[in-house]
Length: 81
Length: 461
Image (tube, rainbow over all chains, first blue to last red; front, side, top):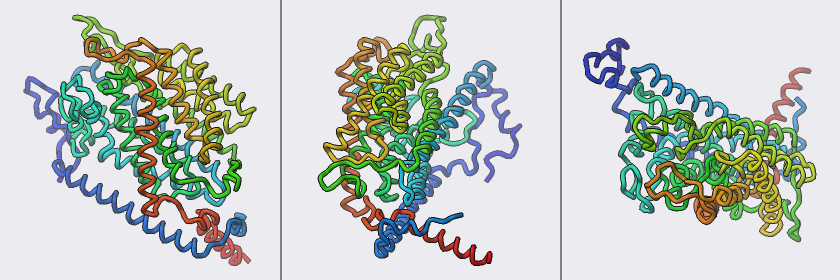
């Protein structure tokens, strides 16, 4: 799971190389190589959010429209706290 | 980063963009205050939530595809070849390609020890995306569904403004090459585009109930809380400092970049086109254009606070296209002209076409942005649009800027806004039911709060 387990080892892998300091693996997040899967999960979560909230909003509007309290009814619901 | 000077340059640039992002958050704070202040009491909480929810929606979609579009589309595609790949197709590789920099699966779209810039540069662009979507948000208050607004916010914030930025706000953009388009601080690429988009949506969405009399005469609705609106606009001004700074590259050596000769160095800040300017100079221009807009707004509106503050914003927006090069007094005059025209156009369009732009967003951003682009074409006529001499870039010119303004306001603004709104309308998802609009979007919340209040007070007896 862990991409690296020792900072010293990670940062000195290319110490003898002619391109010293240039070859340290930049990716240090967990599960390197699963980026495609992560994007897929993210897209599903994003689209799912739209579906869930759109349905909730439409339902709420439908109920309120049926009740049709009128344009001034909210005034009796103004709280004093 | 193995040498100290190189490391300092990179980390300075990283920190510079990071600061701009923090400052630009204030733009969104301001937009939220401004919108809630302009809305009526019974719509307050939904108005706030509508604008707030664009933050995550535009952010995740900008991560998934918005940033990729910016780096892939500078050639059109197939309008003008890239100076990097020499191909007119999408720019996917070659050092600055979309698949290298902005593919959401790319290793530099994450914490990466070999890259310190991509994330903060992405974030700076993202905050521009929020601004574009937020401009649209204000115009539509009190009658659009949150679902529809979310779709529209993604469209303007993660698709259409990023296409126009690729075309006209990128050193390799085809509009810069072929038209001589110049828009240093986004009069067109953000403001004209978002204003045009808002107008397209408004044309389909229609006015708030009661906005126009049966004979078609417009009525004034609000703002309910002018103080909140004005403080919100102050916050937007403040965030605009970050916006201006984020439009620059803070430190760049143009000597080797332009091929000025062996050993020739010219370290400077540049605009997005990699042509030189100074943070110092644009600071003067920012303040002078703010002043020009405030003075004109106060004068033309006869001291109305809402339009005086909006005038300050319209002034900055008008002068922004050329504020990397203008003299401060030029910036002030241009700002005043743009503010005057935006104010007059707002009321003319409202009366003539029955457009209910609740916060004047189309005027302050759209019309002022268009006017700013056109004026820039005349005032900067003949200036090079790029420093890459010999690569065939057109000079800045009025015709190119007028065409550019049309592309921003109409082609990438009004038309997409109109078409998407029509689709949402056909699906019955665009506008809230009439009964809900009359009762207020917050009716259920307010009713529940009243019940809670009664319950608490009865238990206190």
